[in-house]
Amino acid sequence: MRYAETDQMGVVYYANYLIWFEIGRTDWLRETGWTYRSMEADGFQLPVTEAHCEYAHGARYDDELEIRTRAAQVSPVRIRFDYEVVRRADGVALAGGHTVHATIGPAGRPARLPDRMKDLFA
Image (cartoon, rainbow, N blue to C red; front, top):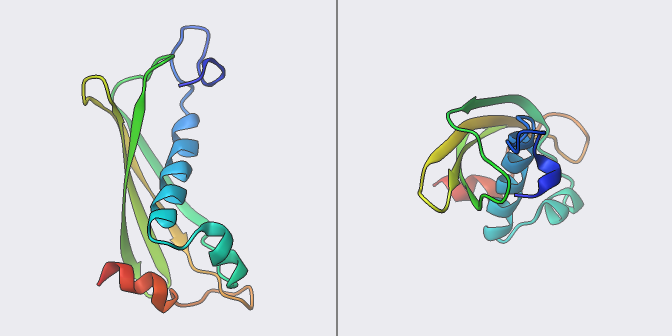
């Protein structure tokens, strides 16, 4: 955790968790072999339509964190990512939440998830 992500008390500013969710989502997609950049080059986007975060314990300056990310197909045109932010030193879950994304296709309109994405949930 970087000092710039904390408040004067050394506790992480709450909105940073949503940024970490995005990092977890980006890394999850990269691990599948399809980066956001290549997905967008193929004409697909996943705009956020819902975001939720529950805070259990505050992360502090210099904590090493792990962002655990899972994905589930919600419908033919939506995907949900679930997140857990865990402090590596002691395994304590600091926060959890989810985001829901619509699938936007090459025409810029809602579209079904590409087969490449749907196959990840089979």
